[in-house]
Amino acid sequence: MTGLINAFTLSCTAHLMENSTAERIANIGAGERRKRLAIGIGALGVAAVIATLLVLVGAPLVWRLPLFFLFYLGALGVFQSRDKT
Image (tube, rainbow, N blue to C red; front, side, top):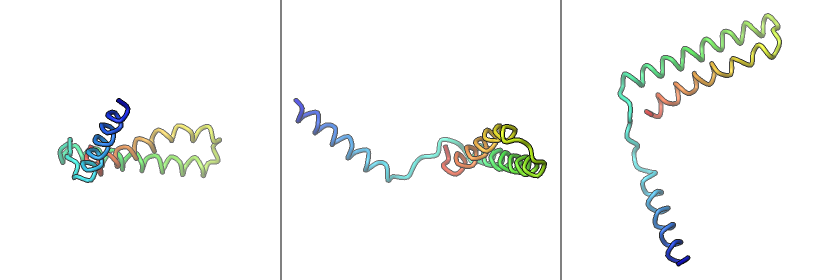
């Protein structure tokens, strides 16, 4: 029984590896990709400006912590646009 399970596992793994090199199908259109890219670039820009201002003013590190969410949103938008997901 164990041999049968191992054979099945190897078969599935080989199948997944063959399909992983195939071109992925985009699940969003060009308009949605542009929107996600614009939101991503905008969020990264706003976060960079706010981070620069907070550093110049000498604000405490705790005040810069919420910028993580803006940088995350920006990176997420750019990566989703690039990967077409």
